[in-house]
Length: 349
Length: 195
Image 1 (cartoon, rainbow over the protein chains, first blue to last red):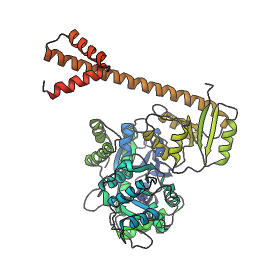
Image 2: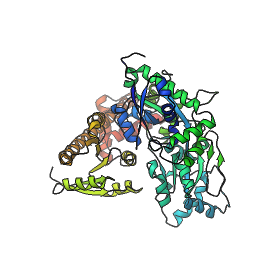
Image 3: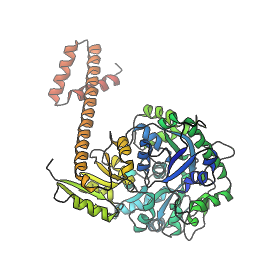
Image 4: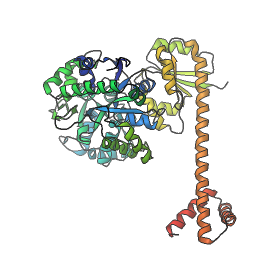
C-alpha cells in the first residue's frame, strides 16, 4: 500500500445484529492485518449516518441496501454518488406483532394457534372488524423510507391482499420499536435484530415471520463509500473489502457466531444481553413466550461457501429499484437503472 | 420578517431545551418542546404545522422526520439540527443545497436566532426556486403537447399552422378548457383512430 494513502478510517454503523462483520473485523484484527486503523462509530439514525458519509465525516458506513441508490437518486437528500462495493449480509429482519394484535387475530379467526410464517391474509378479518366498529387502523412501523424493511412490509401486506389504505405505515427508530409496541402506539413492526428477539423475551409480542420468508436471500446491508472517496483511495477500499470478507467467512460457522454475539453485547456495540443477540445469529427465530423457536438457518447470512454472496450484482440493484418503483418512491425507471450500474460495483473485490 | 413563526423543538436534553426556549423569549418564534417523541409525532407535525423543526443531529428521531419528506410532499418543513461544532461546517456543506436541513453547533444558543432567521429565509428561497422550476417544466411540457396536437391537425386535416392553432384555441375558449387539455384530447383521439 502506498504511503500517501491514509490508514485511519472512520466507519459508521448502527447497533444491530447484522453489524457483526464490522465488529468481528475490528475485534479479531482483520482490519489491522490489512494495515487499516478503523474506528467504529455508532450512529443513532440512518439519516445522520448518510449525511455524515456524504460530508466525509465518515469514510465508510454500513448502509441499508437501498440507501446508496437513494443517495444517487437524491431521494430525501442532495444527490451524492455512493457506491456499494461489498454486500455485508442477506436477510436479518422480521415482522413482530403485538400481543394484543396476536390475540385479536386468534379471536377473530377462531384459530387456536397461528400458522407460522404468518400470512397477512389473517389480518383481513381483523381489519374488516375494526372498520365496522369504527376503530383505528392497524399501525405498522418500519425503520426508514429507503429500507428493505419498508419494501418487505409492503410486499407482505400486498401478498396477503391487504389494501395500503386500510393500514397506517410509519417510520420509527429501532430503539423505540419495542416500547411503542408495548404501549400500543404501533401494532406491528418490521425491524432487524436484536429488536424482534427483545420483544419476544419481553413477552410483548409474536414474531410472525422473518424477511427470509418474504424475500429469500436478498441483500440487506451493504458497505457504502462515496464514489469520490473510492476514486481517491482505491487500495483502501480494496483492503476494507478484504477484511470484511474475512470477517464474513469467520461468521459462517455457528460456534464463531456465538462468540461474535458475546463481543457484540458490549456497551460500545449493541449494549444488549447475549440472549437477544445470539438466537438469530445461530439460526433460531424466537416466536413467542409460549411457543417454540422456529429454525431459520439463513436468518442472518453473511457468507456462503458455495456462492459468493458478498459480491454486489446488477440483479440485486435492479431488484431494489423495482421495489422502489412499486412503493411509488420513484417513477423514472430508466434513470434508476442507470444509477444501479454505478452503485453496485464489484470492482473493489 | 416580523410575522410569528412556530418551532417544534425535539430534544431529550432538558437543560439545552430550556436554554433554547429562553434564548427565543420575546422573539417572533413561538416554541413547543417535545422531550419524548412518540409514534404520533408525524400526525402532530401535520396538525400543528410548525414553521421549523429543531432537533439534535444525533437523535434517533431524525429517521421519523425522514418520512416527512414523503408524507408532506406539498408542505415541507425546514429542519435545523444541533451538531458538534467540529462537524458543523462539513455537514452543512453537504446538506446545504437542495434539502431543508441546516446544522448549528450546539453550545451557543445566542447564535440561534439569526440562524433560524437564515434557515427560514433560505428555505423559502429554495422552495420558491423549486416551484419556479416545476412551473417552467410544466410550461415546457404544455408547449410540447400543443405543438404535437397542432402537427397532427395539420397533417390530418390539411390545415395551416395558424388555422390549426386557431381551431384549438377556439375549442379551448368555447369549452372553458386549458389549451394543453384540448391538445391532450386531440392527441389521444387521433392516436386511437390510428392517424
